[in-house]
Structure formats: C-alpha cells, structure tokens
Amino acid sequence: MHVSTQSLRVFLSVVEEGSLSKAARVLYMSQPSVSVHVRDLETSLGVHLLDRSPMGVTPTAAGTALAERAREVMSIIGGLEAEVAAAEGMNAHRLVVGATGTLGQALLPNVLAGFADTHPDLRVELRVGNAKQVAQWVIDREVAIGICAGKIDQPQLRSKAVLDESLTLVALPSHPLVQQQSRGEAVRPEQLAGERFLMRELGSATRSDQDLALAMWGCSKAMTWTVSGAESALECVRAGVGISLISEHVVARELNEGRLAAIELDQMPPRRPVTVIWVAGTTLRPVEEELIETLDGLTSWTSMFTPPALVPAP
Image (cartoon, helix red, strand yellow):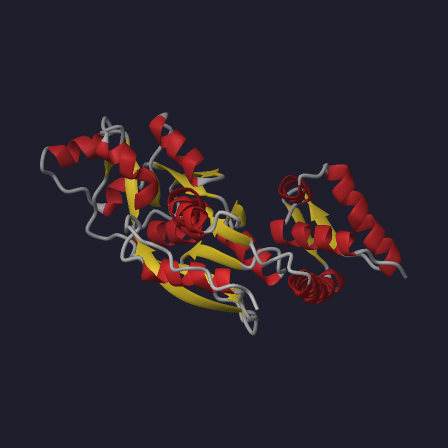
C-alpha cells in the first residue's frame, strides 16, 4: 500500500470544502488533478472514500475515518518540519500567520507594519481564508497562529480573545428603509422579511453570525445570495443587489463617506471577539508570542503601539 502525504492533504481539503471544484480552487490545482489524488487513495486503500451528488461530496464511513487519521498525520508532519527547521535556524526570522478576511485586510497589515519596522530581517507569510480554513491551517501546522473573528471551538487548539467588533447592517443611502430612518421612523425587524440578504460563504464566522441574526429577526426564509468574501459582499451592496450584515471595520469608510448607510435596529447581534488560536501543547517561538502580546495589548483596532524588542531564539 502506498499513500502519499500530498494525496492525504488533497483529500482533507475535499472533505473540508465538500466539493472537488472548491478544493481545487483552494489548492490552486485543476479539478482533474484533485480527482486523481482521491482515486489514487481509493485504489491504494481498496475502499470507497467519497459519495458524490449534485450538491457536492460527503465522506463515507471509511472516508471519515481516513480524514481523522490524515489530520493527525498532517499535524505530526507539520510539527516535524517546524522542529527540523528550527534546529537548523531557518525559522528564527520567519512568521507564518493565518487570518480571516476582515482581520487579514483591516487589522493585521497595520500590526505587521510595526513588526517590519522593528525587525527588518523578519520574513512574513500572511494567509487569508474563512474561519474554518484558518483553524484547519493551524491544526495542520501550515501556519503557526491564526487570528479569527468569533470563538473557535476545537479541542486541538488553544485560544485567546484579544479584541472585539460588531456587525453593521448596510444598504444604499437611497434604500427605502434608510429613507424611513432619515424621517425619524424606526425600522422594525419584520420589515426586513422582503429584503435580499447578501451572505458570506459557509465556513465563514460572519456567515454563522448572519444566520443567527436572520433567525432573530424572523427572516430565516428571506431571499439570500451567497457571496465569497467581505469585499465582494460589500461591492454587491454598492451595486444595489441587496443589504448585508458586515463587520463594522469593513464598512467604516463607506459609511463615513456616505456611499452606504447603516440600517439600525433594536435587535442586533452581540459584539464578537477577535480570537488568536494555536495548537495546544505547542511551544511558540518568541516572534509568535510577541505577535500575540502585541494584539492583546491593543485597546482598539486603531490603537497606536510600539512592539517590544524581539527576543532572540535560543
């Protein structure tokens, strides 16, 4: 029996994404190549791993068992690579971070700019995905730490809340509900039932919050469109496609400049934490600990800060 780690990695992505085509996009591979890796695994193991349907793919019992073991294997391999690289001094000035979309676009660039100023030899890799992807990157040791919106409940991970943020319901200024507000008339949740809501993709922390908000407003059966990425959803709102519940930091400039307007309701989702995650039991390197300390020291997304000096790796 021959099973390659690359085939295991591809198979895990297919299981996580629920689709061969989505896995191919995430891995920057062609769909036929992804299919070949899955077939090779099925041939090597002599079992059927995936059930296919027009809605996507789901793992069989054997596929579920393989996915669980494959995650353990990827975690061990990632740990070995990190330990070997550290022993050779390769990681002393390298920082690999994963972040959800809003954080990767609106928060981390400013934080990492401070690191660049104080540590000119530091080489940074920033990967941006949804909460599900970031958590899996951390578990698989593809990134050292992840920064996510919302709570991440994974037994393999440790987490620390460092900031928080709220979601804002936005629409064009010409939208009837915005105009109603401008006349001093409150908007009631039941008035949202006929709106088209622009929703983030499944796996996104924002999507979970959006689903809960629609249920709270009694709009679970409202028309929804799924849009991948906060900026894409924002662009659809600008185009007048519908309304969307988006991070306050993504829409701040649009609101300040009057290109979009907030629809205010008495019932809004609670503020959500910004969470740093890493593998439980892992000894973080000084530069990784420093990033967590820096984030924990911020009082707001716009705080000014001076990162502490980097402690040399032992």
